[in-house]
Amino acid sequence: MRSYQVAHPEKQRAATKRFYDSNPVKARERGKQQRLKNPDRTRAHQQLRNAVRRGEIVRPGSCSECGRSDLRIEAHHDDYKRPLDVAFLCSACHGLRRILG
View 1 (spheres, helix red, strand yellow):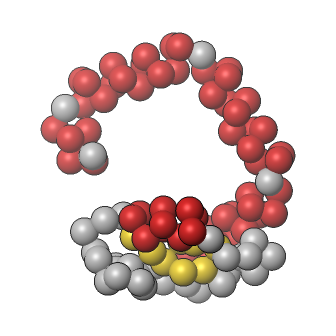
View 2 (cartoon, one colour; view 1 turned 45 degrees about the horizontal axis):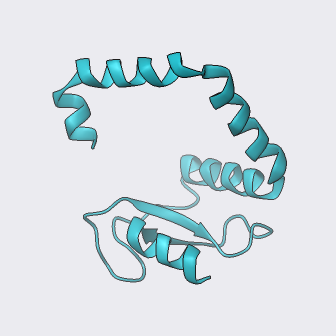
């Protein structure tokens, strides 16, 4: 996706403009509602992001379940009360973990 965006910046700008022109307030409010609805989740994501930025946690280059490195690697929290206890999974394994629990 990123390589397409770089190769076609005019299409990316047009799509972004259409998105924000449709209803920018609604998009912002939805994000705010999600943050207010799930404060533990928001706090855990923020603490993890800061730990990665500080170098306390290193994001691996491959999935801890299947070992794939060609997909995006995402952090999965089993418990938001333990914000730094995460599993780094590829987007496919992360989707399965969310569905299956």
